[in-house]
Image (cartoon, rainbow, N blue to C red):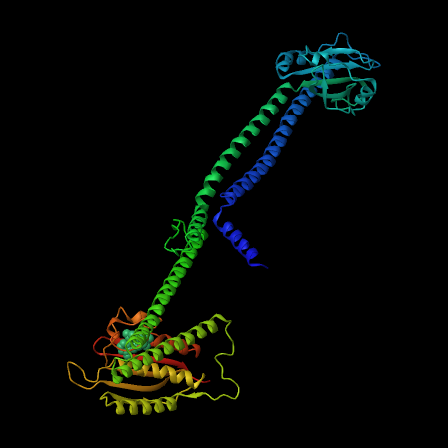
Length: 533
Ligand code: ADP
């Protein structure tokens, strides 16, 4: 892929970060989904409520009709018993007093009663309310069915407006008196009784019910949707805040301003956890960026200083090489040379740390803590005593009155390479020598450095103690950082990388390094190595 294509890809990626797509899509999506859900629930419950209410309204109408039919049958039977007839003939005119007295109140209920003989002639009818009066007798086949008690329909539409009426049709039988003197209706069919009821009131009730259910569903839906909208807004605002913060950080990426944080919601829920995690991530990023910046600044400064000396000395020598006495030329060249060595040392140490960083970025090797095949564990006490001998020799030849003592030594075997163990010891001893004056300014006693080795549980611990200048408590947390040097240490030679290297090497061997120090009294470094199992 060409560079140009790559660049456009980057720009597109950046656009994706910087430009909001649909700002409230999740909120709207949630509100809409809940509204649909509520609508479905309301619809189902509305339909069920309407269905069951309609059923009970219909049942009440059917019950009223049946009761009226029962009353009419009783009335007809009493009339027939009072006027015994033969061959199914009826007393004419047929008067049903009970039904007549009901009639007025029945009319308000919209109920009408009709009695037909077998020739489908009307023998009796109540004064029917509209539209019942227009209801004509059922057609012949239905009439025949009615005589058998099998009339097919119970709700029909009549009139031009297709109004609904409920009808109840049943046969009228010749009453008979049994041996006990009781009246039964088991005789032959002599006519048909029709009770009918307009369903205007019921239909009106049903429509009102439907309207109310619809209106209340809509109101409930509107309230729920508004409620949902504000609830989601209240619940989801941290997400918007996170997006805003991330966006503003992305926008100011070049300045690397990571100081913004998202306000924590008062609730102690998952959203608060998301905000906490996001803020923690920003804390970590900010710290890492700050450390990286400090490192770059320190590194540039540390490299710049020797370079300036080398450059200055060489430039001076170039201009004045013929005027300067030979000794001075040599001193200047020596200075330049020692600064070159210092530069090389810094670069070497930086390389070592960079390599350790890269190794740390690789997936951890499960076997890293175990001994390589054919490799012997490191005998720490041997390496230490050897080094002490060398350092003592060095101190002696320099005419230093510093005392380097060996304390209690236990045999310690650790996994790792001897060179790393030696390097850690060199750094700690070198520092102890550097930061311990030959003579204590107050007591006049000579400075003392003590090394010892102890075994404790699963650890071998190397102790390096000195009676030197010590470290201020505010410097202590930083001394393992790259290029960090306490102010009081700046008068001594150093790169500020020694302890960073010592810690990295120790950690590579699954160990740890700790320090205790009292300014003016001395410093105590302890290196904990896991023992060989
Ligand atoms: P340097 O090259 O400055 O010694 P180091 O990384 O080895 O760098 O140490 C970092 C800082 O820790 C030193 O600059 C010094 O301030 C402090 N320090 C380390 N060892 C001692 C010690 N034994 N006594 C006092 N200060 C120490």
